[in-house]
Amino acid sequence: MVGNFRRLRGLRDLLPEDTCKLNHVVSIVRLLFKLYGYEEIITPTIESFELLAAKSGEEIRHRMYVFEDLGGRRVALRPEMTASVARFFINNLLSYPKPVRLGYVANCFRYDEPQFGRYREFWQGGFELLGSSNPEADVEILEIADELMSRLGFKNHYFKISHIGVLKGFLSDFEVDEKDQNHFMNLLDRSRFDEAFNYLSSLGLSEEAIKTVRKLCSLKGRFSNTLFDKAYKLLLKSPSSLSSLQDFREILKLCSSINLLDKFIIDFSFARGLEYYTGIIFEFYVPNFRLALGGGGRYDRLIELFGGPPTPAVGFSPGLDRIILAMEAENISFKYDFLRGVHLISIDRSVLPYSLKVAKKFRDAGIPVVLEVLRRGLRRALSHASSQRAPYAVIIGGREYEKNIIILKDLDKGEQYMLSVEEAIRLLRNKYNLG
Image (cartoon, rainbow, N blue to C red; front, side, top):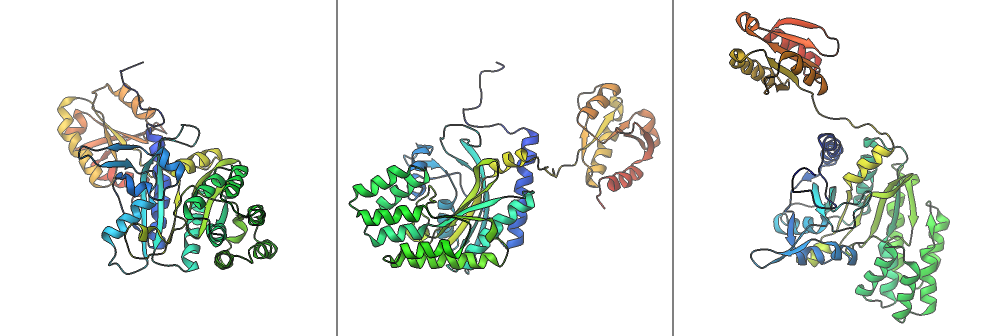
């Protein structure tokens, strides 16, 4: 082993090509910020533990990096971004006209067991729409998620979707308190169904009510009137559930107008591992890749819980690391916004001042330049430039300096030309499509 230190388990070093892939996905996220009117924000990586733990869910609370800072405060690394966005809104944007659309790109941390697609530091994007309770806000978030996947090159992505208010409304109408509801949802989220229904029994819920919940949780499939009619008949004794079911149906009806409905798989047993959801919840997937690539939902009471005014909200977060893995699995190409630099080689030290001036003129014209700084001989310097996939090399020696010219070598074709600096700039700007 070289050196005494290694990176911590579950964390990653991103090589240049990995960083380029991440930047490509981030560039599409930021394009959608612009197209849909979301303003990007940055929040601290560290927040108070109480804020992050308040509605994060049992599993996430146990996986947070928690510590005491030098001021004796209990703080944590953010495990996700929604709580931070809610805090940001309360601290900074209460006077802003509604709705408020916020976007972010952030690294988050959870002390999970490292495995494929699950890291202890990971990257998320996010779109949060605050201030509207209307179904068109939910549809906008679903549309953005779909648009992100399409623009990244996915062809067969689909959504698993439900409305958490349907289940929670039923349990509330049968006097199951919020803490017990959250525990039940957490068990569903981890697919521990028998344990979940046994837990309801332990609360004293009637067998008839438990049977109804079981039947409701068995309802899944593509949208159909039959599916919703079955749910409606099961929930006749629960006004809260019926209200949520109607809201869900209205959202789906609007989604049909933009051809989203065929991408949805409805699953009334679906629950996400966060306690703040109040309305629709969803995750999105691609075939032959078992992990969700992102998800989101409606959280109408979180801002009020944190001391702000009642503020309905809905949002979603794409998992950028998993999206990259899925793109690699599906052989989707990455478009790197990276101009490979012209390598500038000085034949001897006497021409260095001239070479530096040439490099600056190139860069001022938007042409990237990589300067040879190891003073290798011409042959080795050209070999290195080729290994870096440089398209061109600029060679400057004493004769070039005296004549105020350069040698431009096309490393792919092996051809070279003697040009003035201005001629070289015009040629390269054309080659680099710089206008």
